[in-house]
Length: 458
Image (cartoon, rainbow, N blue to C red; front, side, top):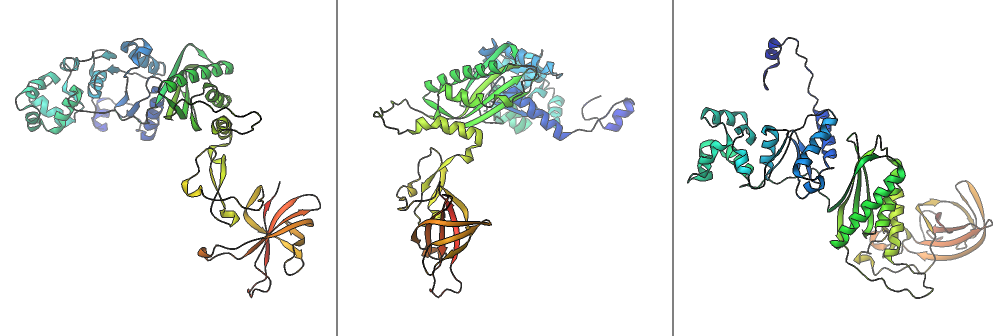
C-alpha cells in the first residue's frame, strides 16, 4: 500500500480493506480544536493540513526544557488517542522536517546546528511536490546534504534554481534560515500573557476564583512594567480532556487593577463546566494601550464629583452583564429637534470634536424620550390652549396642570417637519408627559393640527 494508490488497485491487493469517505469539514473542525488546545503551550499557533506550528520563543523554560515541552505536547495528544511527532528548530522548515523524518517522536535541533541536523534527512523533508522529488532522486540526490555542494558553489542560489527550479531552492534556503518564512498565527498573539499550571486538576468554584485572582496579579504586574493597560482580555481554562474553556471581556478604559479584572471574570465563572478538572489556566491581554502612572487629584471635602477612573469599574461590570452596546451616555448635538438633539456614545469615551460646542436645551427635557412620537387624541380649547384631556394607548388622562408652549420649528435646510408647540402635562395621578401639537390653526394648511406624545418625565 502507498499514498496515491487508486482505490480499485488497493482493493485488488487487499479485498478486506475498509474504506470511509473523507470528511473535509470534520477534518477542518478537528484542526481548529487542536489549534485551540495548542494555545496552552504558545500564544502564536497556526494549523493546517501539514500540522500544528507553534512559536516556542521564550516559553520552553516554563516546562523545564525544550525536550520537556515536546514531551508534554506528545503526551497531551496521546491521552486523546492521537499520535503526534514534534520538533523544535530554528526555522519552520527545519521543524517540519524534524517532526516528519526525525529519529524520534520528540526531536530537538540545537540552535545554530540546523544545517548539520538537516543533512542526513531525505529530500522529502523539504516539503517538495512529487515531481520535484522524482527529479532529485533520478539524479541521485536523496539526502538534503546532497544539495549543499550545489548551493555552496560559486553560482550559489542562481545555479541551484537553474538546475532544479525555484521551489526546490526556496524550500532549501527557508529550512536553512537563509530565506525568511514567518509564522502567521491563526489569531493575533496577545500583547501579554499570564500562565498557571496545576499539579492536580482543579474543579472547585472557589479555587477557580483564586486562580483568576492570581493570574490577574501576574498579568497586571507585566502591564505595569510595560506601562500598559488592558482593554480586551481573554481567560482560558484548559480541561484535562483537552477542551479549552474561554471567557473574554473588554473594558471601557485601559486598566491594570487586579481586583477589577478578577471581579469581572469571577462573575462569569458560573457558566463554566470544569468537567473532570482544570489543569492549566492562562490570562491574555489581547489588546493593550498606553497607561502612564498618574497621581489622583485630591477632591475637596464634600465634593460628590467622580472622575472617569472612578466610574470605569462600574461601567465595566454593567457592560460585562448587559453587553457593551447597551451601556453608554448621551451627548448634546447641535439641533433643536428633540430626536436629533442628542447622540448615544460610549459611556466614558471622549466627546467628538464636532459635538463639543453643542448647547443643552434651555427648557426641561423628559427622562425617557420615545423612539417615535405616538399619536394621541386630545380635547383642547382652540386655538392655542393646552390639552384638557387626552387618550394614549387606549387610556384616558385628565390634565391637572400644564406648562407651555415651547415652540420648536422644523429644520428648514432639511425641508421637512412642521412647527411644534410642546407642553409639559401632569394628570390627576401625578404622571407627567411631554406632548406637542404639530401645525397651527388657521395657517392655511390642508390638514388640521395633530397631537403627539413624545416623552415621559420621571
